[in-house]
Length: 241
Image (cartoon, rainbow, N blue to C red; front, top):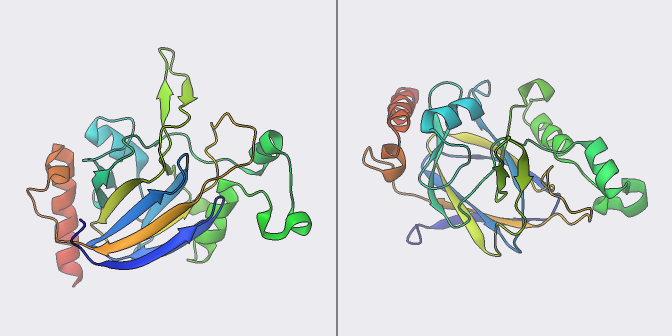
């Protein structure tokens, strides 16, 4: 991917939020600048926003519990939003959702905008709702999200535990977009992060031009369901333009 042209970059502070349409064929790189970041993320079809990321299909179709290279991110219409073409973190949570205002207040206390201005304590749920509102979306459009850079493991009874320090400084993940995709994200702390210190971590976003995905791509070939979804996506894109 290094040979591809960088076309956009921006830094997102801890507890920040961001949304943008990224065209198919481009690669979104998320970078954990300091280590320990959490990037809660949702995906929507940029032109038909009722199509959105589907956690059950993403997991059951690939027989996985977490995301890493060479897996893919599926929509609820049997298509692919993105393929994970590079990943130096190696484990990304798919099941824990985001925290809300009550969670943040009970764990970290409260600092309001009136007290500290833009440094007030934020929560993932409201960050999502703020960004979704910019695109005519709202609470009914929320679905289970991905938490990039966060590792959560189950024990024998199914209890989930957050693994501290799983993502090191400079870790990155590359998502090659297979659809024109609205990406909505925030960098609030993971809901299972055991720390009682308010310390959300920053990230860097980079977008690159990419080479077209082919049917022999390792992400597409990693599971038969990915191949079927890629074929659906290819046909959808071909008939749009």
